[in-house]
Structure formats: structure tokens, C-alpha cells
Amino acid sequence: MKPIIFYTTLAIGLFLASCSNFLEEEMVATVTQQRYDTPEGIDELVNGGYEALRYNFNDEWSYVLTNYGTDEFTHGLSYASGAFTTQAYNTYIATLAPAEGYIGSFFDNMYAQINICNIGIKKIPQVLPPGDLQNTRLGEVYFLRGFAYYKLVTQFGGVPRKLTPSEKLTLEYTRATDEEIFAVVIGDLRKSVELLPAAVTQNGRIARYAAQHFLAKAYLTRASELYAGFSKESDLDSAIYYAEEVINNSSRKLAADYNDIFKYTAVNGPNESNAEIILAAQFENTQTVLGRFGNRTHMYFLSDYRTYPGMTRDLVNGREFNRLRPTDYTLDIFDRRNDSRFYKSFKTAYLAGYEPTLPKWTTTDAPDPSLVGKLKFNLGDTSIIYIANKPGDTRFTPEYKLHSPARLLVRYNSDGTTDFGNQVFLALSKYLDPFRVSFGDDKGTRDGILARLSETYLIAAEAYGRQGDYTTALRYVNDLRTRAAYKAGETRSRIYYLAEQVPADETTGTAADLQVTEASFTPGTPEATRELYPTGVASKEVMFVHFILNERARELLGEFHRWVDLARTNTLVLRARAFNADAKDNIKDYHIRRPIPQSYLDTNQKGGRPLTAEEKALEQNEGY
Figure 1 (spheres, helix red, strand yellow):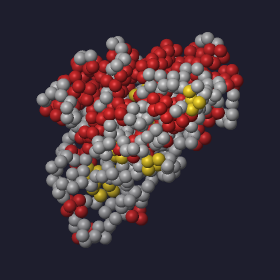
Figure 2 (cartoon, rainbow, N blue to C red):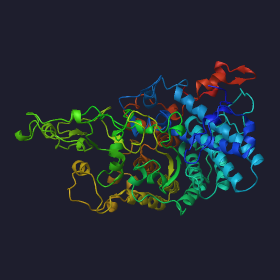
Figure 3 (cartoon, rainbow, N blue to C red):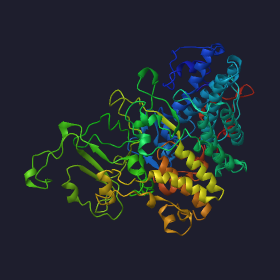
């Protein structure tokens, strides 16, 4: 840990390989700030700032700061990483403390990027002549600084405010308030909206609609419960205005099929240029520009599969790190029969790919004596099936499963037992990456989505609903539900038919069954009961907020928003206790914020001397 000077110049050289679709700069070992007195240096500076986007997908901090300790996911069997135990972020045990490494790494990196942006804000007007290029480059760094401060304030609350370049060693900092940091976030994003072009010519760069999306998100965040003490009366109107600017932008539209967003068929393939994507961190399969990590999120949501007959670890099914498994809440919040997002988000079947362990029928399990000694299935056939059925399903008896050629892993067996656990669970399939160098390689190649249009719809819906305009709110929600429904004639997996007990020839569209009304957040209705509201959520206004959280779970599951969503709505403790069995015993009210890193406290000074223990305590968040 360095003081907040952190990385003033060397970091730029290290980060030049960001956003590979438009960065071709030469790697350098050292640079000085004089380098940024040239147009070429400005390009390197701004391109280096994009590392703030890639960082969010680089390592274990991607999920521990966003998915662990929430209602959606809990930890799988494997949660140890290097010197740190990531489990603490999910269970809120004592090791989630100021000295925990990922907290410090995140804090450091955001300030490294902020300093890059501060240099750019100072230098760009001095180096580039007035005009479109100057405006674009300034718009980019204003966006990236606002983005970094948004990430910091939503994790830590008020943090040190640094809006000028670090040109010499600075050792004395004090924390600004939450309100002051939100003013920076919104001011920077508004400036970026003014400066950025309406569209981009280089894939991966920030356009005006991306700034509008994040500005709408910042206004909605400030209007949420955690920040009620200083939110502005106009915040919801502003959130609606900027969200609808994006929604009404003719260059952005919802993908026709939910699967189109995540179906990764080629590096830089069609899914990565889908018009629903508003902003994505750029990765590809060129090893020289992947940096130290690449996009590593492909590993974290996967369950064990290689130990089963006919299977071994491979590129298609992924390097399974067993970090995150879905909670019961996540499996049950979907209308699995009508909402295609469930089966398009989870992997429910695996195909055999390893000949040496292909199983054969025995006298014990063969459904017919003539099959004894023959292969149960061949390479390329289904070898593992996951069934996310409902309680009370009596079909999956021991005998039924014994005679199945594929291994059946069932959530609710006929005898009340389950095959699901912290190593056996439905794997989120959104980040599978079969285009890595080898099955053991952790450097992922697919882009990391930071914002897509469906979230913009939900921002608008939440803002309208918070104003009491449920009609408009539900219009946006039902637009997404129409897309989420199965289309008439759409092919569905046979696991869908088996698990949901739907007749095999049924291909009727499900849009009508998936539409939602105010009944879903009206107390006492059957529709509200199906929304699984935590105990104590009783009024329509509060139910609406929880309904939107449910809808965000269905649409944005595992997309690295959840912890902040629960924190900003002040529902983190309530929902973790209700739905995350591993978090409920330890989570406390103060966990709504992360601890300020110990490394920052230990290097900070006051009046030329290190902080005293009492002064460090004043800088630290409550409870840590």
C-alpha cells in the first residue's frame, strides 16, 4: 500500500494493454508526466484509464465485493484464494476486517485510476486543440473518474476526495462525506454527458448513452434509502430523464432473445456487439493484451462436474472454482415454467467428453438384462442432468435414478433428500469461456458487461414506482418480461420439460402468463406471496422496492450489482438474514459498508505525523 499518490506514472505504462479492441500502444517501463504533453501521450493516458473497467473482472474481488453475502449467492465448497479466505465476505465473520487484502486492492486501484483521470483533466485542454477530439477525451476521463468514485462511495461511504493530480508525495488525507462524493460522481457524469459523442467508432470506448445510463443509476442510488439524509427532491426525476434518454436512443435496443446477450460463440463475436450492451470492459484472446489476469469470472460460478463418469475438466464446461452457488431464493424467485431467463442463465446438462470413464450398465442398474456390459452413453451424449424441481415432487425415487443412463442430480428427491449442496449446484452459464488457450488457463477472453439496456429499463421502472406511478413502472418491467417469455414454437431443452412437468409437445408462448400487475406488490394477494417477501415487508411502497429487487435478480442475476443494490436500498441485512443461511448469523447493521483499508490508515498522516489510534478510529467506518 502506498499513500494516495499510489501509482502516478508507472501505472500508466502497466495499464496500456486495456480495452484491446482499440489499444495498440507499446508497453513501457517508466514514463513521466511530461509524456502527457503530447497528443500521443494523451492517448496513452486515456487508454490507461480504461483499466478501471477491466479491473472489475480481473480476480476474486469481482464477486466478493458484489455477490457474496447477499440473497442471490452463497459460497460453494472452494472459497480459499491464496493468502485470503473469501468466505468472510459471505459469512461476515471476523476476518472481514480492514486488513483484508481485496478491500485494500480495490481501494488502491480505484485511486490509481482517479489519479490517471486527474492528470487527464488537467493536461487534455493544454495539449489537444478545442474540438471534438478534446471533448471526447475529456468526456472519457470525467466518466472514468465518476465511475471510480461511484464504486468507492457505494462500498465505503465517504472517502478521500482527490480532484487534482498527485505530482508529489502527499501523505495527509481526510475522508469527505457521502454527500460530497456523490456530488463529485454526479458532477463528473454530467460533464461527461456534455462532452462525449453520441456514438463511438471504436468498440469499447465510452459513448454519451453510457454516461447517461450511469448518471441515471447515480441519481437513483442517491434517491435510495441509504442516502435519504441528503438525497435531492429532483433525483428521481433526473434518474427517469437520463434513463429514458438511453431507452429512446435509436442505436440501443433490447436483444430479441435473452440468450443472445450471453451466447459466446466466438471471440469478439455477435453477442459482444449486441445493441443491448451499453458498456463493456474489453478482453480478447491476444495474450499480449490480456494483462496479468484477463477476465477471470468464467471460473467462479461453476460447480464440480469432472468427477462424474464420462467427464473431465475441459474448455467447454470450464475451470470450476466452486466459489458461488445460488441460494434457494434464487432458484425459487423465477417462474421457471414461463420465464426463459432461468434455463438461459443456468447450465442444467453436461455432455460426455472423456472416453476412459464412460460408464457401463451392470446387473444392479441395467433397466434391461440385455444392456449389461454396454455403455450407458457415448461421447457427446448427456452425462449429467440437474433437476431444479419443486418440493413434494415424488418422481425421483432411488430406483428411477438408478436406471437413468445420465447421472441425475435432483434438488428434491422422492424421499425428501437432496443431491444439491455446496459442491453440487446449478452453475451460472453467463460467463463460460471456451476460447481460452487451454482448459487450465484462467485468462478469460470474453468482454465484461458493465451496463446493458435492460438495467436502464429497471432504473426507470424503479424511479417511476418510487414516485407512485406504478403503471409506467410496470410498463418497463413487462417489456422485459415479454422478452423473457418463451416464444411460440421456441425450442426448449428436454430438462425443462422433465423438471417443470410440461408436456413434451408444448411450445405455446408464455408471454401472457409472465405479465405482472400491481397485485405482485399489494399486501395479501397470492401474487405477492409468490414474490417471497421477507417477514416484515408489509406496505405496498416497501413491497415495490423488494419487487424491483426480485426483478433485478431475475434479469441481472450474477452480473455484479447485487451487494450495492441491497446496500443502497438498506435491505442487505434483512434479505441476507432471510435468504442466505451462511450469512444470517453474523451479518450486522454496520456491514452495510466495507471497512476502510488498514493500509490507508497506517500510511495516512496528520500534521506530519502518523495518525494515533484514536484518529484512525475516527477515520474508520462504524463497527470495524
